[in-house]
Image (cartoon, rainbow, N blue to C red; front, side, top):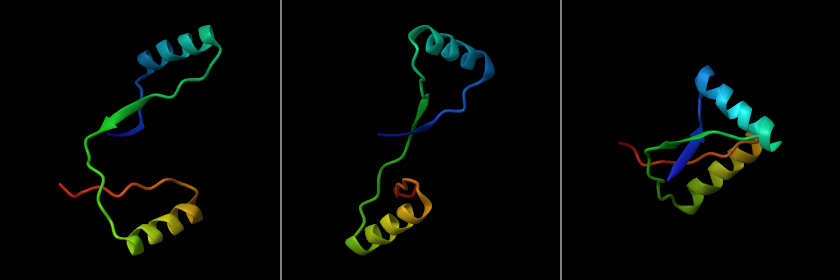
Length: 65
């Protein structure tokens, strides 16, 4: 399973913020992404890893629909 950060509507964001205040901890909201990771050879993985380092992000290759 893969997950991405959720775009939470304002009314639900208020609920999350209320719990954050109560427990004294920030919370991150994630949504499931319906995708299956792709199987890649070492050369392709190396290219992706190099780009991840350059951009400072995590990239996930997924199978096309």
